[in-house]
Length: 427
Image 1: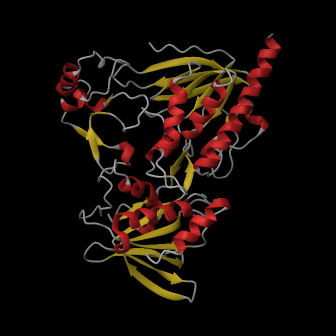
Image 2: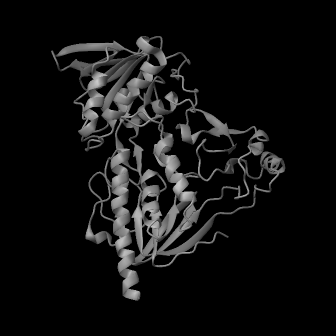
């Protein structure tokens, strides 16, 4: 059984992405007891799935490594992975929370040696790489995973392969008899940092995502460019494995559209500008990028980054909302529309089309197990009716990494204030 030590002076953080990690660390480093709950088997969220940050073009290890080091060194934080909050009752300063724990089938004795994976042949979709490839059913989620511990997929539990994986482990780390658990804990305040998800591209029917293999999403392109990704960093067409050197980036794919997402997701323009760098790095002057845009929203210090990309002769900007995408006999996607600068019709052929999908809250369409106020897009609002449940990061708005971290710090401070007042009242 999992043991959780928590009182009404504990702060519960739901979500272990960059925002949740930040909120947990900020609270724990003031001496507060924190329980951090994450539904995936690893921390880091979608930030860990990026290849690089803009505008410095550094790898996410720059920030995640420091946070993981802080987390490992802080005894005030208890981390529960493969964990999901299923119920919240009580009031500000006195919440009771139920958490469902899914078995990992691997305990803390794991050294990440990989012998269990060698003993297994069954493969499953690679969730970390947005299912662009496959991994063994005994797997380490990714190279920076925390906890650095393998996972046995439930699909092979009860089969000879699971037994083979257990037999291959020299450390007694594999426990095939682990069962789902439900634990109850107390909390004085809750930080809800469940992050975001990319908008469902299949809903944008004119772009034929899911039907045309060479139409992909911006998050998928990020994994293709990463040397640790499914193609070893080679930008290859899903249809035939050929190098994609002429790439279209379609902005506002689902965003700023009453039929899809009403809001601007803020990060999409900068993400596409960043991704043109990947094309240039892989192919030099042979790499061509075309950005179809309504307008470019590069605010604050990002304007210089935009100016540098715009000055690149290998990057073309077309002011247009692409009307539809077709496919030629060779599997090349063709973008159709009207360039509003001159009102000229176009039908441009590319090797690959990347949809800059909008951001929506991870909990959209899912009932948060408490009465929490949200806006028309599903983002958590700052409202007194929420009591001591505070939204953080992209659970509250469409934010880039920098602003998500700022939001998480603010949420942690609010949670600390609640717990401090409670402690003074009980003193």
